Length: 512
Image (cartoon, rainbow, N blue to C red):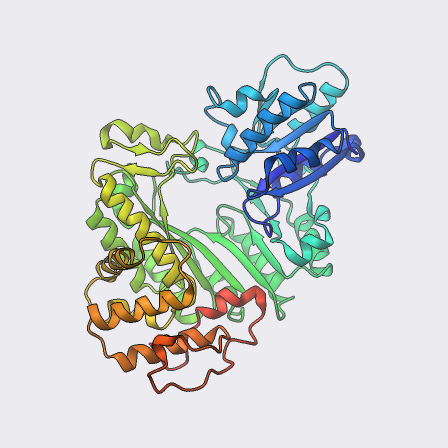
């Protein structure tokens, strides 16, 4: 039992609530009265409520995000109905802006906006001492790292074995992209490097080999990023995996030399391209040197073992279907291993809303608040692009079709046009974009490549078969049984589970 419960719904079991661990680490004298509970968004909220009430808490703090706003709202409403005397405190980006009128805010007792690492413990003290604040909305100023106790000791052995371990060397972002909460002039703050690396060593000693950095701009401070890369390079061994979010046009020689020393599969860079349209970039206050970006991508692809996850956004104001297609084709030719086609979301508090009237931006009222239409892309076309994004993830990003996916646009001028055609054709056959078995998806891709694109059946079958067995599969789909194909090998079977998705993106030697 605990007087204070910190809880949230994670999107997946293997995710971990990094923010709640920061809160717990900074509870000071209240730490012994605090417990941390994590749930999945698929869990029944009544079961979750029961587990929280089993702790007999006086205060419940809940982390609210775009992916869990709906179950958390239900949880809060039910909690206040069954136990109205329990004080409910909300925090997180989903309730840090535009709080007025949100049902979850109306149901709760307090809301802490901003970074609540220090404000939440102080509020708990006030409540326990029976001197609660009168204001419901509490605005927390961004804390400096030297004010905080780092939370890494709170990762449990279960976390180490089964969950993503999130870490951060900095907070904030200097850029002002209007679709992002970082546009709200949140200052960049750097953790003490020595203290941070000591914490990383502690995690490493406990067996952690996968580190996901949540810094918005890992390569902003070159001194720090070099020190962190050197730290891990000295400890580089089998199973090590590092994820960083990188500024696309900032990769000086000092970083290049370090990055090139890591073996393949260790580094994953999430690189937000978002748009190649310079007029759109200016419209949304995003500065980006596209020439330098392309040069950096070519370096990473040709001279390093980095796995590149690149992001593009559909639906930005001023972006036409044609300009998005041109940007997509440009990115495909830079050959990142993954391209995440994201649908623009209208996050609470972001200044992207200043374009609503001029560009006729229409967003869904329900989470995740995706764009439905705008002046340049109507609802029908936007929905086709949403389907395009889903099929791209299933076929191009999954690693299941790394060789045969290139056949979709073989000898064509535009990869976008070909994949857009495929997505429409595929939906016409399946009438769904989810729940398609891999064998059926492979069969449909075979039909499209041979019947629609007119490619040679034997060659297509061979490519699909190589893709199919690279993941360790040994069954042969019925549509491939008529072809003379080799027995499955063990090319990818030995890949460590942590790197499996990255390993699946490696093309067979000698194939373009």
